[in-house]
Image (cartoon, rainbow, N blue to C red; front, side, top):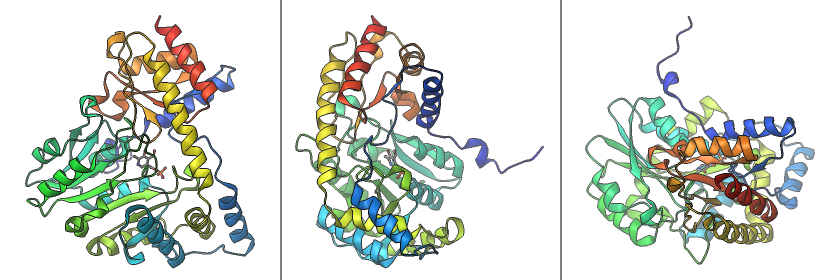
Length: 388
Ligand code: PLP
């Protein structure tokens, strides 16, 4: 028998991909599927971004680029960061990555080892826990509670930190609950971290433009006192509907930058030039398509929340960010994953069971509103009929 190192026995995955595969299979067998499971915008990448990539290919940009990204792309990210957060970041601290996920992979690899504890949101993006377990570190869930507006609590987070804590992962606006953590809570967290100078932070800000009802995303970059231990994850996937392009960026402190640059040299060499040129066009070009997409998400969000709350025994808090709702289904008498499976098999509506995002996800399902208003309405009707 081939024997791999034990980390590979512990590595997990994202069930959203398995649900997508199953939904596609059922669709190929003729079932009418409505996908509210998927975590990607249902919009095409804006035309001018696609054109920039085509031009780059035609102009002959076919070779390797620097492992940390081209200077032009890193400068574009610095401009965008200043624009979004008011904080100046040097291109020398920016890495262009093949997707947002690769930043969490790198950050968790850097701090995860047997004796380490790593804090991560639960419910949260499933790869955090999977990668923590892969490294042998102990995953410590930070509860994300409905009664707290699905924001994390600084007090609860700080109470979980001890001498073994090496990395704290936070995510706002958040997947899967759609919570946006208020500035006051982040202020408290950063103040409390003063006592723990050896704890690094990774702030996943990939949904930074995706807030509603006047909610404001508070970047962790705004706190100079933690900049020397802060990694910020961001990318093009969600904001510019570019999930398949595999384009992300991250901001690293000086002390860690060479580590991640060398990891890139060892693992993926670089991100291709046409995608980086498309990335620059995304940042510097018109944001009209982003505005239109966000308007559509906002309309769907309101529709979805209204319709789902009309189903007896389901309550759904209004999400403040990202493009997910996290209705509470505990009063239906169903276990969340069983309900998600039954909904797909019996009604053709794909959703994700809350436990796929962590232990505290029981009692909830995740609905992505990256689908048309017509489909959202139809899907909720089917869910209501099924539960009746
Ligand atoms: N972080 C969060 C919170 C996400 O929800 C996702 C994607 O769903 C990612 C990171 C990964 O983004 P990418 O597709 O660019 O790897």
